[in-house]
Amino acid sequence: MPSYDFKCVSCGHRFELFTTISQRDKAVCPKCGGPVARVYEGKWSMGVKPVTGGCACGGNCAGCAGCGK
Image (cartoon, rainbow, N blue to C red; front, side):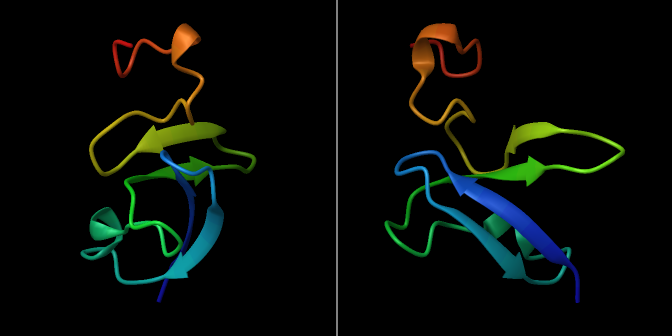
């Protein structure tokens, strides 16, 4: 089963989740239940991609084009 890294869009909590590919986009933050973004780190790509509503700015909306705030 693959491992995925996530960051909560609401509270900023980072966590790793072992889940199936078909279930990874249904992930929510284990601390607050908020929407999460997948965190990509490695030699192929870096960055954060939203997977459940919201944006991946982590609350730094001033420079974010994703959430429009």
